Length: 430
Ligand code: CMC
Image 1 (tube, helix red, strand yellow):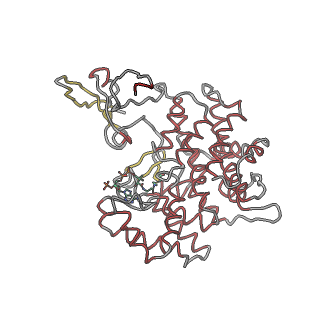
Image 2 (tube, helix red, strand yellow):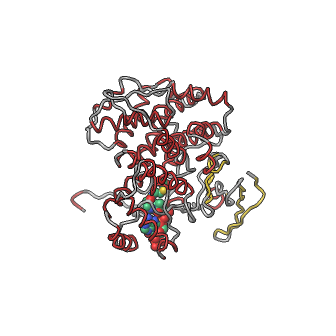
Image 3 (tube, rainbow, N blue to C red):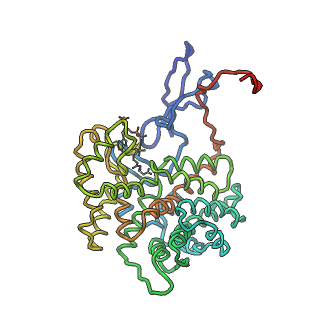
């Protein structure tokens, strides 16, 4: 980060000089850390539309060009040539692994795929009809009650073990949440399978029958995981960082990230999108929904469209669309009504002036739901799959923050617009 430029700000006649930091890629950043001390003013930026909350070496997004890099590598290359576990290594340690490093990493992750047996009882405390995200928030938070030997965040070794445990156990926990919701027995992980294939095995196999994971579906699942692995300072990642900045343990921080991801404006959009496609139901009803999306008085939005940062296209959506075509072809799904609505909606929205002028393009969630539904997942499992895939990104960001000597507790300020100071009145005088 070079610091050679500066900006001058005039605050009520007083000139303040602010350093401008130049990143490796992306726009320059004005450093306002000393602003309050020098000028007695805060900056105001609800939703952080103009604010960088940290520096990071992990992920880069160019929203205008539609680019996404993990540690400098374009997402398209990783989705095509790498695999999810290798991407996990890259995100966590900064470089692609050698063969020996990869083997060691795989062994470390697969040794941690089972959860403490007593956690089974914990699942049984939930209602069967609980949303799997509700179960995951609870169970992942409860990991702090089971793995005491990896909650001391000042110990790098414990941080490492907690990271591996989270990456290894999240698929097991998500699959258990699913099995519990449908009344089937929990399926233990199989460490001879790839990360993605093992997840499909834990979700779809039953003790009474042999289950063979279709390699093409495992590959598609691996790709979904890779595309969701990290996305710089989005809402859930910022939540993980903010929770972690107070010194909270990693299991609690990841549970906070899962809770934030659940919202329909974020990870919950994949479920909301598929439910919307089903609600539209047939191609002839699309104009009605497009009109609703444009109506300022109607809160309805086209789910799976738009992004805070991507204003050209979402590069993950492009790869996901290819995957969707491959999976549907493989499974022989051609005339599914949801798919027909999705294709037609995409076409109409991409030509419609409202969506074009506001740069609203299909995002990753528009296509991921189509693939996951074709694989046999219920919509309630879409967001848990996003959560388990994003866990590595949350951890990489959390680790980066903890080991940064500049790390401070996150504490935004506010523009207070409430009542001026007033005196308490006795009840009889109100
Ligand atoms: N349908 C209709 N209009 C929309 C949509 C949409 N999906 N998204 C944005 N707009 C309009 C919005 O009404 C606003 O119009 P105006 O300028 O006239 O007030 C304009 O576009 C800008 O929207 P914004 O809400 O200021 O943009 P934002 O950056 O705050 O929100 C977003 C980004 C992703 C929350 C939003 O586009 C949205 O709600 N999309 C649907 C939910 C969705 O698909 N979320 C998944 C995002 S990708 C995966 C992830 O990050 O988790």
